[in-house]
Amino acid sequence: MKKAIAGMVVAGLLLGAAAVWAEDVTKVVVNGQQIGDGVMVGDRVYVPLRSVGETMGAAVSWDSNTNTAYVSSGKEDAVISVIDHAKDYVVGIIGQDKNAKYAEAIIHGTGFIITEDGDILTNNHVVKDMEKILVVLGDGTGYEAAITATDEKSDIALIHINASGLRAANIAAAGELRIGSTVIAIGTPISFSLRNSASVGIVSGMNRSVDSYYRLIQTDATINMGNSGGPLLNLQGQVVGMNTIKYVGTSIEGLGFSISADTLQYVLQQFRSNGRVIRPNLGVEFEENWIAKYDLPSNEGLTIVGFHNNSPAQQQGLQKGDQVLSIDGTKLSNEVDYHEVTKRYQPGQSASFKIKRSGVIQDKTLTFGAGE
Image 1 (cartoon, helix red, strand yellow):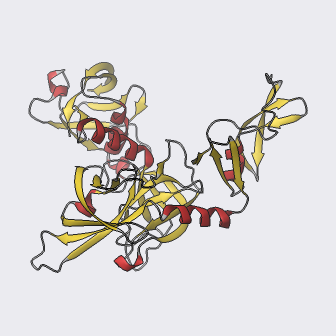
Image 2 (cartoon, one colour; image 1 turned 135 degrees about the vertical axis):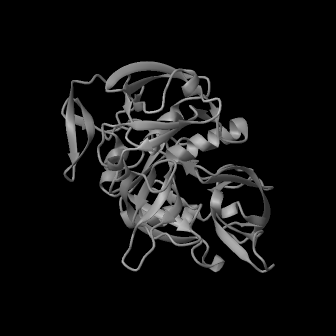
Image 3 (cartoon, rainbow, N blue to C red; image 1 turned 60 degrees about the vertical axis):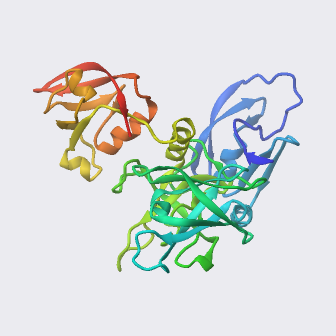
């Protein structure tokens, strides 16, 4: 089974040597872009093969069964290969709208298979109002599906079909994406008859806060109604995001947004461990500085304007008007920053908070409670 290459693969392939001693480390620039450090051994420079390939628009994969690195030299070949493989794990999702006043109301979206025995990820908003859910595979085979877990805040849902031997998508690890990277969006836009439609674009921006609980990826790959829940793929065929929303207007083009692979992995782990997402909770209501609302640099942090019942923060001495500046050294400018940082923690764990009260900055260790 091929998977994205990880770690360092030496371009010179001196894999038979008993040991390779680095004489020097040197900067490597490909097509004007620095890709990291290379290792000098004699008169050769050894660099990560994957980094070189991605920078030059090639696809690189690793077959662990044969210990073989594959490089597809052209971007067009890579796109064709990714789309060809994706048809095996991208699915169309269709069902009746349970809130509609008439029986013929049908809604649809997209998902992608993540286990060989039928687990599928999609958007929560695709399935939350859906009943009699039908999943259609790339070959046209249909299966009834059941909702396993949902999370409204992240807009992610897990559904299941009774099937086996399916091909599963590979979700990328954190940090696998850069602005300018080529990406492919695959889904079921507008009509269910247009299943597995593909569009190609680039990553236009990272860490976007767009009326969302967590940061989103911005892409100019075309995303339309019905693409929701489908994968955003890199040239290695990895899922780097889940397509979820777009800006719409007569003067707006190419503004689509995807949930990051990091958030997908976080929520999926919670689904598997708890059946739902249990978040670390302080029981506070924050107010953002107006500057932060426009995603501009701000040193004001988040101001506490209220507490929920049995608030862990209030019980541990925080007060209205306190400004939360950072958590374990990570600066906070807006609520999305706070939500991203708290992915690192579990309920019951503690963290060091920098608090500003009446102009005085103090450090305080707080323990998170549990919430959803």
